[in-house]
Length: 67
Picture (tube, one colour):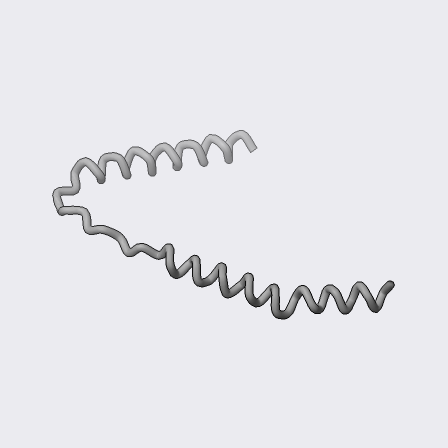
C-alpha cells in the first residue's frame, strides 16, 4: 500500500510539474471556453420537473398503499 501511494504521489507531482511548464511555454493566445452554465441549468430544471411529475406521485401512492 505504501508503494502504491508513493507511486501515486510521484505521478501526481510529475503531472503537476509538466502542466506548470506547459502553461509557461504556451505562446498561443488563450481562447475563451464555451459557457455551459445554461445547459446545466436546463438539465437541473428538467430533472426537477421529472421528479415532481413522476417520482413524488409514485412515492405518495406507494406510502398510502402500505399504510
